[in-house]
Length: 279
Image (cartoon, rainbow, N blue to C red; front, top):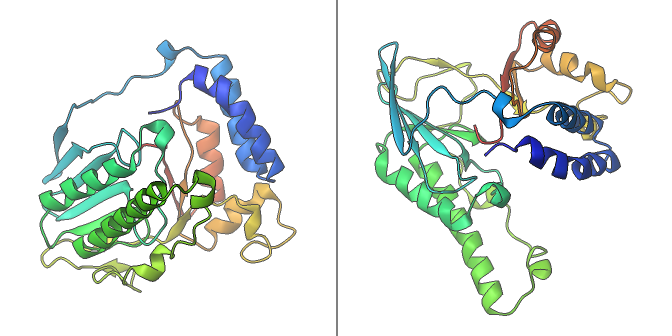
């Protein structure tokens, strides 16, 4: 769930300090802006969702039927899978980190055991030939999702065995775990160097945009960004080289027209996707 104004005022000042100590100035600014917002807003002023559902929902749009179903607590307690029937495409968001180490947000209700239940439920429900879009990593298939499921199961088993052996939490987190990418085979249905892909016969071709989750990383200076590039110019520089970027931030209200205009000016040929933590 999204943080309430009270939670922001309680927790975010420490996060701001941590971001400053780590040199993440843009993150510190973003967190500070949210603190200022929380000081002047009440819960009643936050717009309520237009559509809600307890377990699942179907949306019919442009000749497509979209199934949305809630899963057991996994990445968070607010995860949903989205299946496009006609296209035979499944979007899992942060329920699926393909060849990327997953983040399980326990503070937001996430659960390792729940992750396995959610993945098992998804695998049992979708067609064997479905194309799967993860929240992070490359587009893949059911085999790729199964590999991710086995990786999560392996981590849980390692933790269980360590606990049974009396190993401390601090010692366990230092355990040398094989990188997910090295233990998982290359997805069989996802590799493409083309801007168009048609893995499903009869499905309409879709345009694939390549980008990253976020762009404001000082660690990229000297490798991707020039050493002397100001942080204020990072988005413009990025957009000249990649067609899309995820603005991985939390919007408790719609961005202002000025913010959107600034982004549009800096990214005339790119695509921006703004995402809340549990989207």
